[in-house]
Length: 215
Image (cartoon, rainbow, N blue to C red; front, side, top):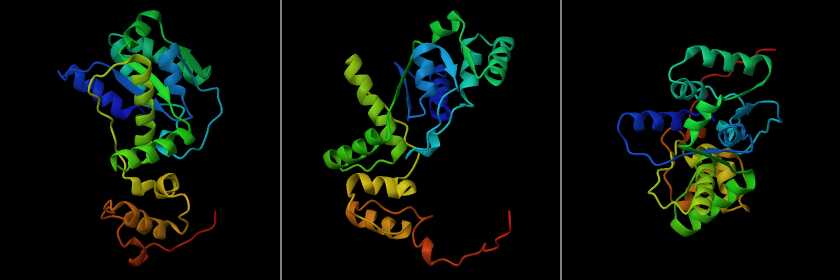
């Protein structure tokens, strides 16, 4: 999405954390994966609404910070690249910066990949992922199959599966139907995973904001 988790990991490495490889996972909006693999950032492409909506992004705001660091802190180069993105809708990294991207691996998962990984990990490990974590898990498995790299790996998971209940339950129990609130209860019944406090009994609480205005 906005390259936030992976940038935080990059900062952690620079503070001393030993990191072998940064695996950048995208959904069908794979502008970041393409950039890592080609050195070209191109937003002239179709935009998709997916089941991992926090990754439905074409301009990744935190990437600019990484580029600043790998440029050696050259603000003029970064300004030029960002101006090209605004005017030409694409830019290509200078070769010396591309050479510093070898610590990054880019891949992506489509919506079917995402749901299948939620299902298989739940069946095999009894662990329930949200859709964004599943994107990361899919790309990790692709990376591992491609490289045979068995380095212990951390997948940054930031969302509860209950935030995307419709998609998650469609992966593990597609016959279940109902309202959003009903599916929250059904997901809990099926998996035993605790419902987050902020969602628990939300449908029974008083509605505080009910004003509707014309457009």
